[in-house]
Length: 472
Image (cartoon, rainbow, N blue to C red; front, top):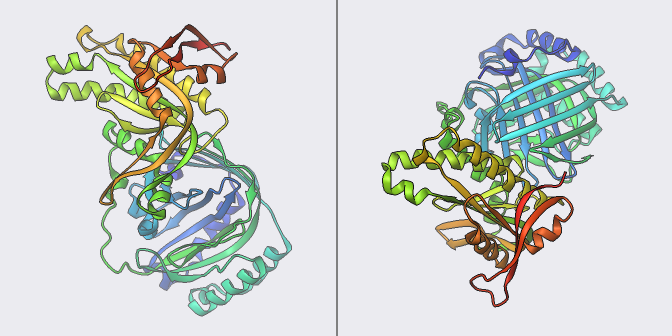
């Protein structure tokens, strides 16, 4: 994958020109270090609690790259980068403090002299559309005027940089911003913001969710000694890191091929990782009550395939169909909790509660049926499968179960049990939903075959419906 510097031709911007001029002014003795010059969004927090930051360094000792930083509302940091490897971008310095790093396509477009659009995408792992407007203020203008008066040769002196950082921190209320320190991997850094401005406005959609309005950060966040400013700021400058305390090994997760196995294993964690980390920090066991829509999906015909085919072939066929199912679930922002041999347990509303969780679960079920059916047309008769789906909604508990040395993040409760039992009633190619789901979707979807069904573990029958289509 080429870097965004190569793949996206951006309109000329005054910040690109300023970054180029700055790269030429980096002191000569600093060029023996790991240095980078460009522009950054130091950090923007949204109503959702998510924080986004950007580093765009087209000039530097380890090559050109862009990195998008994301901190979830629960505090888990991820970095998406477009360099050939993670150790040739920001994750090199911050990997010890990150939960995850992923290579992605990152595109930057200046829509006007002051409006920047940032897009980061990688198949189902991240889909970010972020736009911001660079503003101006009397305080940042004053800081920029002072900065222009300081000779470049002095800006590589730690005492000078720390003095500048202290002044900026006091004037802008940045929350303890430091110009020097040690990064999480142990390398010492120096930061030289040459020009700063407030982020006047920003909007973002991450994996289909609107992150809401910009807010001033309620807490100071640090990665090693590096501080994310509480106030949303845009800066042009350079950064320098001294030699690594130990040889830097390539980050294997960053260069793993984007194949089926990686997709399936990574996707299961992607939407639940924040909840897992939160539960882990809170303690080993315990859960949280929430409302969610639960899907059980069973691949019919798999047992027959296992009897006739070699195990390697069976695994290939299973993964091919699981990929279709998982891709569809993630397209509707669902979470995959378990692979049940030849089945899948998914939930909508566990990792992020939304008002249309039941509707998105129903849409995913319809699309899974259609996609699986379409995929069978080109296959040999003895390789064809179908799926039976059960859907129910209601309160459940999500959290950790198991042993202190081996925990499993899962969902439990009557809602989960009923969804599973409804799935066992579904015929191949059929999706059955509970009366609660049908009531929630009345007028938006088409149902038939209404009936009362006995389910194991319940004295009273459960009313079920067959989901046919949308009514749009």
